[in-house]
Amino acid sequence: MLEYVYSLATQYRSRGLLLDTSPLLVLYLGLYAPEQIERFSRTKSEGFSHRDYEFIRSFAGGFDRLVTTPHILTEVSNFMGQLHGHVKNGCFEAFAQHLTEPTTHEHSPPAQELANEAEFIPFGITDTSIAKVAAGTSLVLTTDAGLNAHLTRRGIDSLNYNNFRLLLPD
Image (cartoon, rainbow, N blue to C red):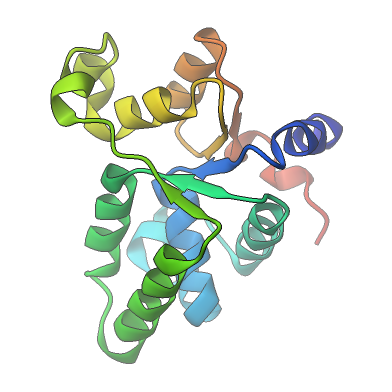
């Protein structure tokens, strides 16, 4: 399984990686306060640990570009808004830094266009934007099994992090 993960990474290295909300939240939280990953309700409920942060950071760092959408960024921002004090401020600083990096590529398909896509009703605007932006251009890393299955059926390369996270070395 890990060989497949790394072969996809090699294939998409120059095209880009699109991190869904949860992996991106883990990345920002880990950049400032990795000890909070196992404490923050959103990441704790998905069983994320410091090990997951280390993998996501390293994996994402192997791509020439990180692809995102305003919808993913809004979800991440809303979750980080639930943090408090210096942790909240530090995570938003990491967020701001990431957004200004030349390797970050934000794609903004119009909401009206997304609303006309077949997946809008069952998946919503964020996942529809992921399908629209990633099609033929980016590898997707998600923890959403339904989204992963949908993307795969559409021929969009996607990895469900939950399918291989237990295989990662400690």
